[in-house]
Length: 129
Image (cartoon, rainbow, N blue to C red; front, side, top):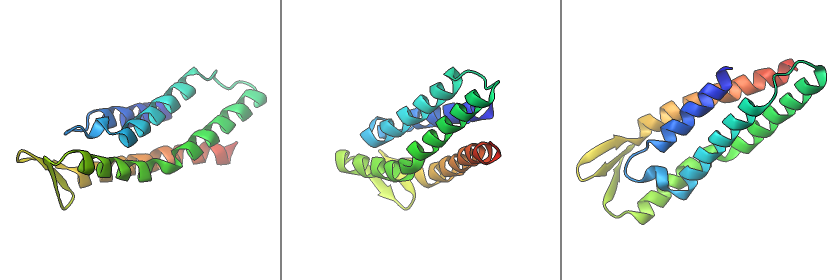
């Protein structure tokens, strides 16, 4: 039950990014990936037989593999923003728009730390089944 909650939180976090970052194609793609993974897990019947458990585990392996490109796509989204918006400056790990800062480095730290937790939950399930 913890996994869908974590996936939903990541999708919401991506949706709330400022300065149009959430609308960049790569970021949208990552958000949709998290949303799709959330719905796949939530719609899957609760495993009560070995066969259903096996299918559930295979689905989790598929989700894990689909998420392999998340880090690169997040970085690509930042690059897309920089290329499409000349009014946004990047200094260190922060983005600035009209003097307002957004600590992108802090966001990445939180996001990637949470991503590790999601992958760990998936991997634990896979290893136990």
